[in-house]
Image (cartoon, rainbow, N blue to C red; front, side, top):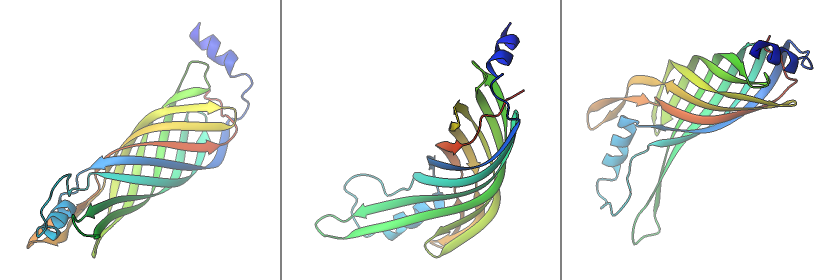
Length: 204
């Protein structure tokens, strides 16, 4: 009974494939131990009145080109993330700033499981990215991996994909702080949304 309903709901969707650009925004949570150790050491001469010196959140934007065929797609992705930190020094006009960045081109693949009317689907996927990370004079790069899950919502030609992802991004022993080596690390969870405009593609 369910399969008959899905087939009828998709009779008006005649496209079996599509190629289209996309745009994404998001934010993530992580704990870059070496970066935070550097900041703590850099600010050791100041008395901390409130808050934390640690970086634990970043913001990301991405662009993609996707080829979709029925229940599967593959995307070429380029993502830029920045984790800013602003430290106000009491009784002065000084503002100390830090920025930890990542540029990550890569390839991702996703599988779709349709539900409800058949226009919408659960999305499961992942892939590999090459991460270029930078903090102050420290630079590191390495291949990393991403897994992600979300929902693909198709409204006419407008597609919205809320996503939850986990990124593995680490370059070993690229930071020296107090004679101790640390990794440049961007590993963590990420929440985001991808947007694109393309004709709906039938999942069957």
